[in-house]
Image 1 (tube, rainbow, N blue to C red):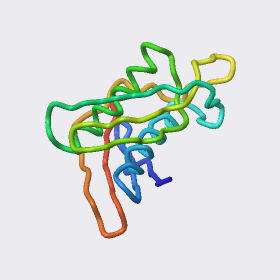
Image 2: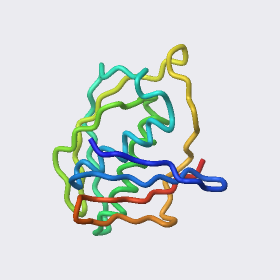
Image 3: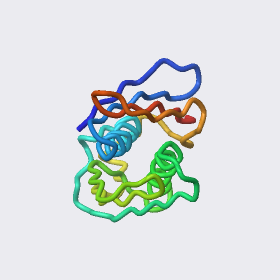
Image 4: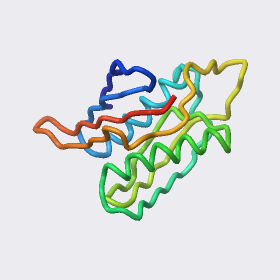
Length: 140
């Protein structure tokens, strides 16, 4: 699993994410987002859900945003918190993953931050000699 760091930002949440592969980067970005939302250790991987995101625009940056937006949508509509992200297929236009988690339980899941949306501001995904790096800004 890759790593991430929270960067100082005035009103939003800014993350730099590292992954050894592009699949690892996408899984780490999802995990980082949920770790900012809630103590991810409190989430049980008792429910699995297949998530399929297709992006009309070709580009890994746009697909990363759509992937994270879909996960936020599942939290808002299905009340699902995820703790595991297994990327099965990934291209410039599509990501298919099996995600594990559980329904929000207010007794056990204390929300840390409310993320309103994933933005395109300062969005960057690049390959480096040691793997992949992304910079993502969340509206909180």
